[in-house]
Length: 445
Image (cartoon, rainbow, N blue to C red):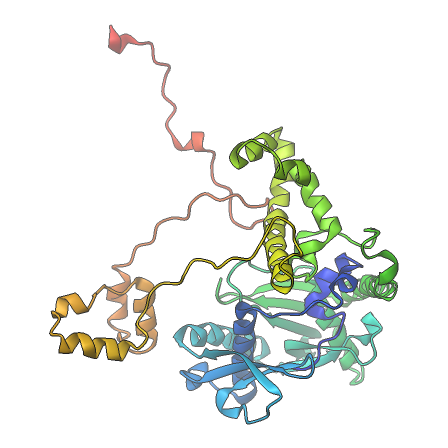
């Protein structure tokens, strides 16, 4: 890894949707999260296995470190034993390769190799040019895996998503389309330019089977025009940001996917206005209301099915906005305790108590002759923990089916989802019950 392009493929949903996003983010820290770093570690393990022809289990119990450069915005990932003594590499996170990571990455590796079987040419962590789309000199993006199947006139672009929250679709996916465009540009120098494109997203922590979308080179070319237009608009907004930031919102476009990873979402005026409109409430009036929060919310949730539909579509954005506002307030108050009127930073709830040195505590209790049953709390492992034991070899392959037969799992609770969700809709509650004849009250006579 290295320095990211300003208009990166991973941020395409953001800057292609909202021209002012990058300008609004200028000067704000780009802090990673533990979840993002875990994904980086899993990507590193996957690319290492694909490049070297190794099974992930070979690296079981090894530590992977995610580091950031102390004097630049570059970052990287490696096995802890290969970190070296470079003082400019500051370790940001460390992850141990466990059975779960091995299993998920193995599914990804097998899927990639299956796509590359029978003559496919595989390129792992391949950097491709994107400057023809963004206008940034020497800008590039790194695709997890590219496969060229010349005999089938096909380019396959594969992206590993290690998250387990929302299933990401490859259909019209801007990040993958940027990789596809860059790959076609890169391949043009070889004279081999496939006309068929397959975009693949593999999210093994949610489902083992990858999701695919077949498109044509014409689809990619159409996307390229939209990407160039969006990049130009974004560059103009960035160049003249002092003329409009804090004064005008015409460069800002609110969207669920576009706003999700924007670093400016905590104090974006367009997003504030959108949330306020969705709530049908004025923030100042809402904060000064004398009724209970529950009643205030109940008064806002009303109207026809169409009105509820509009509100429901705004819920993910509103929830994300609430988290972003809280984070922005905390950031401001930590920097200046007087920066946000009527609020302050206080010490949160103390953590759970634990032994400072568990071995020493155990030894002390033994010397005190504390009864064994008072010292230890035994509990049967969960099915998830048992499966982990099986993967680590603690339960044999012949024994595991007997254990599986003892596992039960309740059905998921009914949950609201958009109509585009691939899961079938549940039958109305009334349909689940037998229709009874009207009660004539004869049993009371």
